Structures are given as C-alpha cells and as structure tokens.
Image (tube, rainbow, N blue to C red; front, side):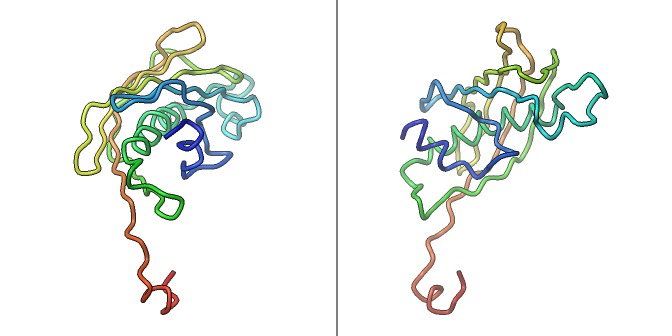
Length: 159
C-alpha cells in the first residue's frame, strides 16, 4: 500500500484534514508532514493579532498521521474501496513544548507500541522545521472494518 492509497482512504477532508504527505511507512511506524496554512479556520480568534495553532489541532494532526494512517496501512489486507475503515480515538496524553504558528510545517513521527484486536497504540512526536520537539505523547485508537452488506440488506433497502 502506497502513501497515495493511504491518503485516499482517510475519512477526512478540508478543512479537517491535517495530512499532506507520508515519507516513511512500515509495520513499525509512519512519518508524515503537514503545513498549517495562514487561512486555517481555527486561527480566527485564537489569540487575537497573534494566531497560534490550538493544542487540540496539533493532537488531531498527530492522530491522523500517526494512528489513522498507520492503522490503515496495518489493516491493508482487510480494506478495500467498499470496506473503508471506521476510526475512533480512545485515549491521548500529549505534552506540548513549543507553539506552532501559521505557515509552519510540522513532521509527525509515530512508533507503534501495540496493535491488537484492532486497537492501535502509538508513541508520537511532532517536530517543527528546525527539528525542534513541538509535542509528544501517546495516542490510542480503534479501527474497525464494517462487515460487507449482504444481498438481503441491499434488497431490503437497508444501505
């Protein structure tokens, strides 16, 4: 499965997509990037005259790259265009060290800790373009592939 395949399966779109590209993909982890545009909706009013990326958005960026993209890769044999993954974050613990401003590019590095019974737990780090640690933490999520619809469901109009 390629970076392009993974990105196409993400259940997000603008303005809530925080993945631009994936540079490292393996069974043990994933690395990806995102550049925060000056026009992002959350900058309006988040620190008047001095916009800063909210921590919840940084956490979401880490989760999308480090848990969701990695989870899609790990479940590649079960996923298809018809059977798309359903994802839910189950827990997060993140420490923040530096702010991220508009026009900054970040790199998220994810290391798989556990992937069992469709629950994925990862250690994550986010770096800025100067390779400074912005934040780090552990995020867990559940990934599920829904059962394919049966012909009975299709005939009954339950789709």
